[in-house]
Image 1 (cartoon, helix red, strand yellow):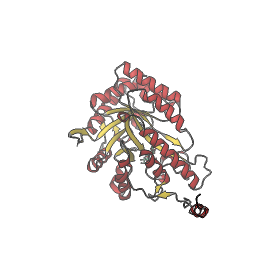
Image 2 (tube, rainbow, N blue to C red):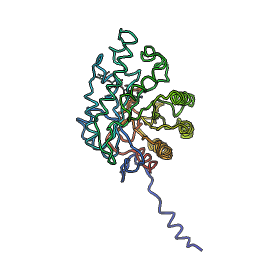
Image 3 (cartoon, protein in one colour):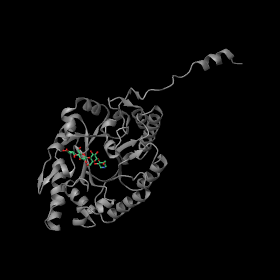
Image 4 (cartoon, rainbow, N blue to C red):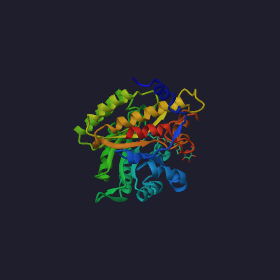
Length: 355
Ligand code: G3I
């Protein structure tokens, strides 16, 4: 019979009650992951922010320009391009062993004012856009690295078109002036500029709206039928700690897994205070966020290896997230690092899910 006193003494040794919102990882995200782990960057941050670069180089091996490689940043006038910010990002990436993902050639929310107001003919407009896509893809395909004895471009892929399945896109100049088939035209032009770069279609709520995922899959089937080049789909993954549920994400991901495309969780972040009821990140909410980030990383790690293009986090520190401005709420904590670059429990959950 077990000595009761032993049992009593055992029960007196309690696990310390966890209350910390942060932790100290032992292994980096990129070492744990079986796919590239990305972070958004800007030329300005890479030029000036030593602390940001330290955390970037430690955990990540892929970068996406948050804004510097969008049309508003590059297309400064008819046949006039400013590639300088993209070049700076690619130069940093090459020197520090990062993959670059190009975002985004065509997006109705990043059209330069002069192009919106372009008064030339639709044919002249089409000529401008075709040339823009070809010049931009060709320009950024020039920087090469040697990987496994093969020379490849630092820029591994592009969001050729972003968020076309929205009313705003339907009413924007691209569809209005290039026609209903403008998405296909853009993919053809991008492929003509670079035979190897991976061409993605990127959109939000694919993880939560099955109807929207059905539309994207319909486009994939149509592209296959018409031999229109496309290599992957970006599921942006701007999610909340409650919805969509992991089951819903899994269900929509399963639909896409039936197709022969790469899958990129391209803009992952996770709101935890959309109601605005929290004035700080509570421990309980931090634990819920940790669990959801773990589940997302696990779910992605389980898809077939040949379809894992990577997961890109849409921001480093909570305070830098676009979501604070978008929801008009400074008390939002959607990312893996707090304002002081401490590793949040969300980072631990994500790490554990990768492993
Ligand atoms: O650079 C100008 C600056 O000169 C000016 O003074 C300032 C005030 O208007 O604006 C600055 O540009 C801002 C830009 O971010 C750079 O900070 C734009 O106004 C602002 O609209 C832009 O927001 C970006 C947004 O895309 C629109 O392009 C966010 O940072 C970026 O996180 C967000 O990311 C998008 C993805 O590209 C596509 N998926 C959705 C995601 C969230 O909207």
